[in-house]
Structure formats: structure tokens, C-alpha cells
Length: 217
Length: 365
Image 1 (tube, helix red, strand yellow):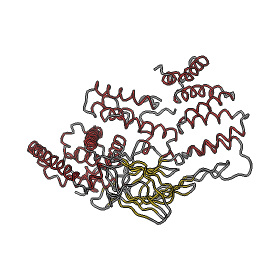
Image 2: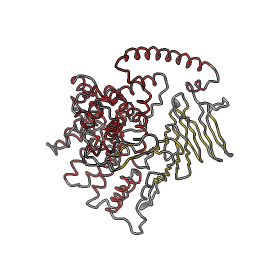
Image 3: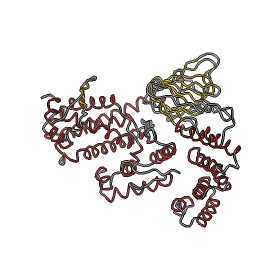
Image 4: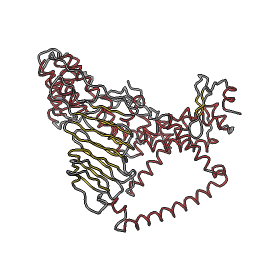
């Protein structure tokens, strides 16, 4: 069955099919797009079109997360690619279809951890340039004020000095705004460890940058 | 200091376009199509894992031996990776260029080409860094991607950091131009928006020195490229002496554009010409904020905040100015003055809104 026909079955109107080089992607522009759980169910049944639709829906989130955590454009693309590859390979492990996005983020964070470990080894071997081309400041939205940008530059400098073990939990908490329980889940550690790592990183960050608490206006 | 509001993701936007989306998807498909063993994972994952580990160890050991062997030969490129960059001919690098145009191939495969009359001096040359200053003229740099060194080219008004690329830097009196042919460079300068600009293939950035007098055509950094709009030029020249509010507007526009020096000049001119105006306190406060937050000059910022306080600012501004004065003094290393200012702040504002931050600056946290 063609993807367009499947979308029609679902009450979804696939308005445009892109066919660039390689495989084309389906662009969904209907307000009635299938839910994540519907897509997840169909991926479980082996329907490849659903993988494409799921990928298209979440790729920006995964790339954005990886860019913010890693600060490097090429590494973030690698992580996104590995994340989706792994996710589709171990799709049978996804128990709660409603939490597909969170599960995907968890895989991405693991890949980011792995990337940091690889960098450390390369650095030990003297093979890493250590030049991150995508600090938070470079990711600032166009309408971000110069004051905020200058604070982001300071923050980038502090984050660079933190180890991945402290940096990632802190970023998940203060950059991504995740609750501590979710930070612990994404970092594969206990809640107490996540709290300790976030707090210790926050002490260092607060010395240089004035930072509000999550949800603090 | 502006307070960053968590979660910061609200201030950030991922850098991804349709091409990247397609590229990543192609990669996912390639990996899945190529990983034939993925289909058999469940049954033989441990076997493959073990085989993979053994293979990895063998490759690591072989790679290590190869690396060691290759660095032991006198002409191996990786010898150069462990030491300073040399000319391909084997000579050292200190000053390049001169009257005729010249081209220098380097030991790591990179190359520097200088136009006639250009001069490039090497400031630091180690296994990890290559820092040079372009004193004059135009240099074209082809930096080998993935090399171990971080390249930095100083050019007066701007610093260019290289990620692995081909680009040129032209230094003329009063301006610097950076053009990128391949790859990515980072240009840092007080005269460009947010003090840092990422240039990719096909983009170029021209930075002009700010004009000394006001109202001026002002320093302007204009960027031209396939996907980046040119920055707007500064305010037009006016024959009448500018009013205080015009100068404040001008400073604001320059500050937003990242032109810190231009904004500072406008604010100082405002204070010099309109020192008795009721709004002069605001100009002094803005100058202090600019010097502290954007220029990193806390000593001068403290002077500006003190000036603001001497100009009878409105009460809301006075509280902020007093707090920022303590912050600037603390950041300038004058802890005694910061403590005295903090005491003054608490006496005037017993329930002041900056009490918590003040404790941090005077070391009571």
C-alpha cells in the first residue's frame, strides 16, 4: 500500500511528496496527522512509511537537543542519525507508545554521552581539535537580545569547563527544562545522583552567570 | 547582568534545514540497509559483540603501532602534528610575505598564499595551535580539515578562528574583510553583531573601523552571503547637533547591532553634551551597563554608575545603579569599595530587590 493511501485511510491528507536525491520524504501538512502512538503502533507492524513520518516529526527535536548538548554541528548530525537508526532497530523495546518522544530523547542523550567519551579518548591521543562550532550563543534565536547573547557566551565558557557528567544533567535541567526525575532517567542514574550532579554544576555556573530556576519568572 | 531564564531552550533555535533533514534520513536508511546483522541481532548479539571487541582491540593495537612507527620517520606528516608547523621545504615559519606575492605550503598539507606587499607574522606555532597576525595585505589560507591545530589569524579589527577551510583575510587601513570559500570560520570582533559571527562557504564579512566623530556613519559590519542579509547601516549623517534622545537612540541601535565601541562613543558624547539634562543619568547608567556587560571593563563601568548616581537619577534607576556599582567594583577586584557600596545600598533599600545578588558580589553567599 502506498504511503498516500495509508494516510488517506487515517484521514490524513499527504499534500506533498518530496523526492530529492535518495529516498523521498513525506511532508505531512494536515492538522489530523496521526498521533505518536498511532505511528508507533504502525512502526511496530513494520510499516516503513510510519518510520519516515515519525522521523520527520521528531528530527528537529533530536538535532536541536544534540546541538545544544554537544555544541558541534557535525557531531549533532551524527548523533541524530545514530539515534534514529538505533530507535528503529530496538523499536520492540518501546513499551509505552505515548512516550515515544521521551524514549527517543533518552537514546539521543546516551549517544551524546558516547560522543563525549569518544572526544575524551581522541583528546588523549591528541587527535581532537576541540573546536566546537555551535555554542549556545550561536544557537540563539534571531530576536535574542545582545544582553542575553553576551550571557550565553559566558555560559558557553563555563559549560566548556565542566565534565560531561556534570554538564549533561545540568543542561537537561536548565537548558531543556526537564524535571529532575526525567534528567535521572535520561542520564541512566539515580535521582540522588542526578540531583547532586545538577547542583554541583549549578554552583559553578552561578559564579559566572545569573540563572533563574526552571519555571522561575 | 541580565538574568538568563530557564529553560534556555526558549531562547534557542536548532540549526537544521531541509537538506540536513534529508541527509540524516539518507544516513539512517543507509545504516539500516547496510546493517544486515541487525536483523539477526536477537540471536547472535553476544557473538557479534565479542567478535567486534576482539577486532576493535586488534585495530587499536595495529593503529597504535602504525602511529608510533609513522611518527618515528623524519619526513612523516604526523611528525609535524606533534611539533610546530614547518614549511614543506623543512624551514621554520616566522614572517611570511614581502614585496612579491608568495605562496607557502606547510608540512601538514595546509597552504598560505599572500598577495604582493602583504606581511604575516607567526606568533605561536605548536602542536595544538597556530596563531599568526596579518599585519597588512591579503592572505588566502587553505587549512587542512581535521588537523590537530587550532588556527587563529589576528587582523587588527577582527580575529578569525578556523575550523578547517579555505578562506581569505584582507587587512586594509580601517577595515578587515574575511571571505570563506569552503568550510566554516568564526570571526570575532567588538565591531560585529554579538562579537562573533560564523561564516560559511560563499559568505564574506567586512568590518570597518568606527569613525571618531559623532554623529558618524559609524562602524559598520556588513555581511554578504547566499543566506545572510546584510546588516543595516547606521544612522544617517545629520547637520544639526544631535539631541540627547537622538544620541541615546543611536547608542541603542549600535548596541543592538553589537557595535559596542560605537554605542560607547554615542553615550559618552551624550554625557559630554547634555550632562545637565534630566535624562543624562540614564545615559550614564546605560554606559555603565554596556561597559560591564558587553565590553568587560568593570573599572570604567563603576565610574559610569557613580556618575549616574551623582546626576540625581529617578529612585528606581538609583537602586539599580547602586547595585550595579557594587557589582562593577567587585568585578574590578575592589572588594573594599564593593562592600562599602553594599552597605550604602542596604541602608537606603533595606528590602532592596537586588539583595540576593549583592551577597554574591560581596562574597557573603
